[in-house]
Image 1 (cartoon, rainbow, N blue to C red):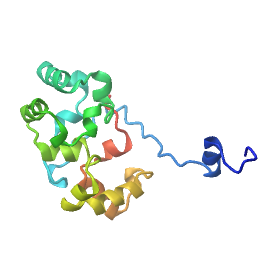
Image 2 (image 1 turned 90 degrees about the vertical axis):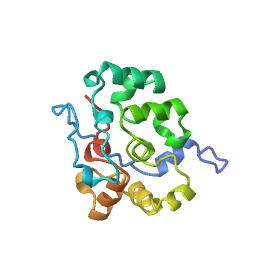
Image 3 (image 1 turned 180 degrees about the vertical axis):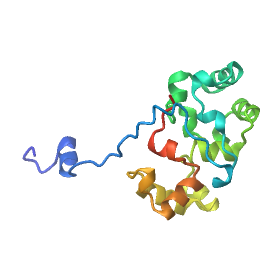
Image 4 (image 1 turned 90 degrees about the horizontal axis):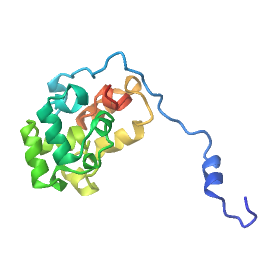
Length: 171
């Protein structure tokens, strides 16, 4: 250290040892993610959200661009658009109407798009999701194929798919 007993941020990180990162799984030969079976999830799978930007209809691209500021970059890289960090109740009325045009509702948004990341502890508890979130947080460093049955069940309850968990990039 610096002799004053306080560690710099770099020294603090170095003392943690090697950081375990999940290896990226390259699925580029499969340009679009496989469509899961609907009954795996608590809500209908929003196939449009997991379709590459260039493959969306012009109308869908316009809806998503005008209401959410999506473009090819922040659509194909899941989680980059700031709106995806909001619960459906935090969206504007126009945005909620836009997701209805796509055939989604707030349950679909909060589960498949936000994965309940913006819920507070009370909301998670009220929705009986807190335990699932805790399991997913502790399992996040693993690949999907390495998840236990309980971890898979919790990840699926939060609307994660193998593609979203391991890759998160369309195209």
